[in-house]
Image (cartoon, rainbow, N blue to C red):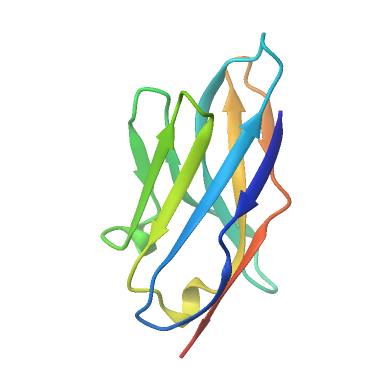
Length: 116
């Protein structure tokens, strides 16, 4: 599985951004969970939000009520709508896929910078 994320950039605090990630896979691979993690400078990579193929979602407490994860199973796309952005949301955001065979795949990351 190859992942290509886009949509990062510079935004002022209180603003919005939408991240997109396209997953390309061979025909036999079944994608289960998709989502986003992020890594701020000097910190570990942390969960932001994930969504299963059935639409069940999971969010980090710090983004609940501000971020929405969604996916298009027909296009193997996952999205992250980020509203009310804060300076502490500044990080490299990584697209993530978990296959039905319990294999993890990561995208290269897209930088989100929120200026205060």
